[in-house]
Image (tube, rainbow, N blue to C red; front, side, top):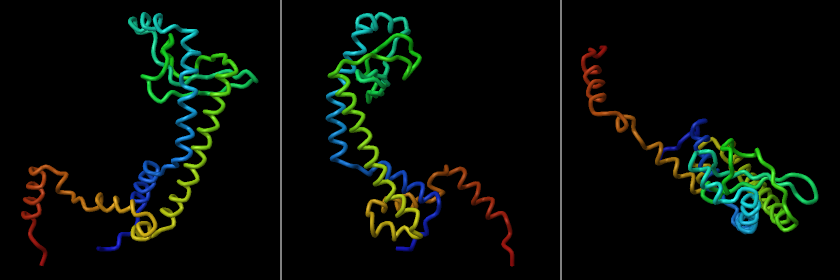
Length: 189
């Protein structure tokens, strides 16, 4: 197996692979639990102001839509943002202007749930970023793919992308024209 020197494109590909595969299971579980606790409370907060029946009527005329980014005014002061994962989970509100344009006053229970969600999200982000810094350091300081593979076996996936040959991606007509063109040029002696 030939040694592969890492180019900037290879490094970019490996960084993307790391971003898509690096997980922090304990922090993810805490985040998922905090999300599950806060989501129904935040949804209820929005639906109290904008009843779902009314939003269905407005949606019929395309003047209501899901709002996945909910800004909550906490009981102790301050504003935090809760983000629903999908539009299907998100409560609907009038004015399809997008995220972050409405504020909702939270009660004590919702405030505690949103604060726990924000803390869990920050902890997950910090732990993931710390791991990614380690992977990025490995990728950035390695000269050869083999050096990365020795520490991180998943990096072998890059090899599959390097084994592709250009003619496979071209149509047979293009390949035939290029071969004809090369054959028409006399070989230099």
